[in-house]
Length: 254
Image 1 (cartoon, one colour):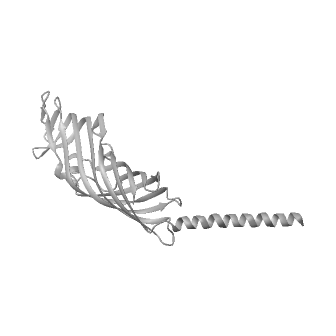
Image 2 (spheres, one colour):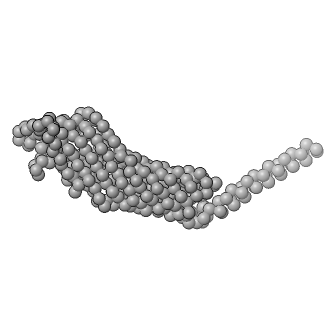
Image 3 (cartoon, one colour):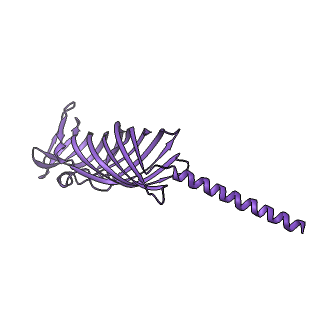
């Protein structure tokens, strides 16, 4: 009988303990506001890259995914009946750029409006400035320390500089097979500014980790699904470019 009473007491304590923890979790969830605002200042690390790697690239001497600034303002709406889940909408402005020096063999180019190929060293530079929006699904941990995001982004180009420089000692070959040689130190510059796509979209995943109630660190990874260059660029060079970049930053929760 004594053992039975002891067992009942233990069971009662366990049930009440679990109920207390469940009530505490519900109280913490209830404290999540329906609407939250965040301002994020960060840097983009990545590049606009050809996918897959073009067959005419023999060697990559240097490749620099430049570090570029970004700013994001995010509004998150938590669901009333499931406050740890929600949707967010971000508005952002950023820059994406890279530099690369490569050895190429038979790369298609446009020279004075005519198609040709080039064999030799080249330097490519791309700078794109974008604004856009990002609708996201958000999951927030019960202690509000971590946000996890997934969604899509839509960005609009408002400025770009896209150049390819052909270095000296290279060989130009026209459609008829005629060859001409660049002299040492001679550089031919081709501009593809007008062949960058005005609208681009892709996937985004990321997380925020908060150090206190307001201040946190943020990480995002973005993968372009649509092409960063127009069809005409493919017709000239046989390649498309896609945006692939990460974003690291500091976020402030209002």
